[in-house]
Image (cartoon, rainbow, N blue to C red; front, side, top):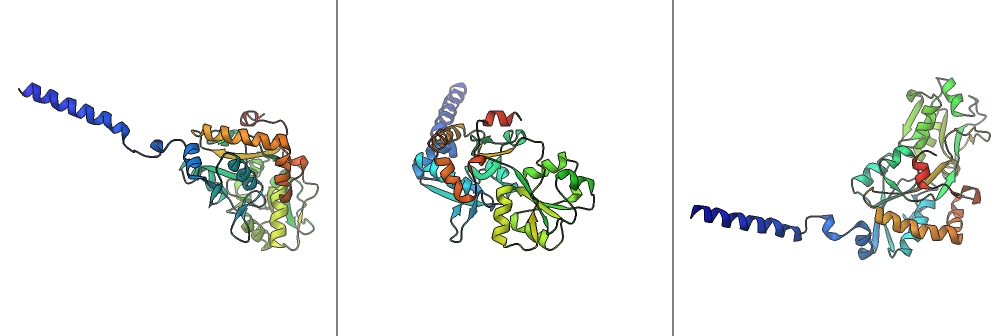
Length: 288
C-alpha cells in the first residue's frame, strides 16, 4: 500500500514539473528580442552622449550618425520607435549584457577585445583619430608617441574609449591619462589647464569643440595616426541575439547599396571618405 502511494506521488510530481514548461518563466516565453520588438513596435537603445555619433538634441530627442542609421534600419524591420537609454560610454557594453537595453548605437569601434563581449553588426563608418591642445600647441604634441616621451603631459580621454588602448600601445602611461565620463568633461579639463590635450575621433572632436564654443583650443592638423587599423564602428548586440543582428545587417546592406547610408551620415559631418568600404565585421574581429 505504501509503495503504491509513493508511486502515485512520484507520478503527480513528474506531471507537475513537466507542466511547468508552459509557465511564463521570463523573457524566453515572450519570444526572441526581435519578435518582442516587432510585437511592441519599439526597441530599447543604449547610447553615450557623444557627438556626432549619438546624443540628444535641444528637444531631448536622440539623434546622431549612429542613431539615425539605427532609426532607418529598425523602421524597415517594422520597429518604429527607439526607446533611448543614455549612459557613460564605458557602461554601454556592461549595460547591454545586463539587459538594460537591446542594442548599442553609439558609433562603437569594432575591436577583437569587444568582439568577445558583444555581437557587432556590419560596419557603418570608418574614421581617423584626432588630438586637441592649447592654442599654439605649447608641448608640441603631434602623436601619441610625443605624449609618451613627455611624462609631464596629461591627456583627457573618455572611459572605455579605444584611444586608451591606442595611447597604451604607444607607450603612454596610465597616470598620463585623465579618464573622463563624457566629451564636455574632456573639453573642460583642457580649458581649465588640468590636462595638456584631449583625444577622440576626428568627427567627435570637431563637434564637441563647436558645441562648447571652445576658445584658445586648436586641433592638431598634422596629427600622426596610430598604426592600428582605421577605426570602424557599428551597432552592438548581445551575443545571443544573432537573429536581431542578422535582420539589422540585412536592412543596413540595402542602405549601403542604395547610397542612403551616405545621405544619412552627411548631416553629422561624415563624408564619402568615412564610409566603411569592404571591411567586414568578421575581419575586424580577427584584427585584420
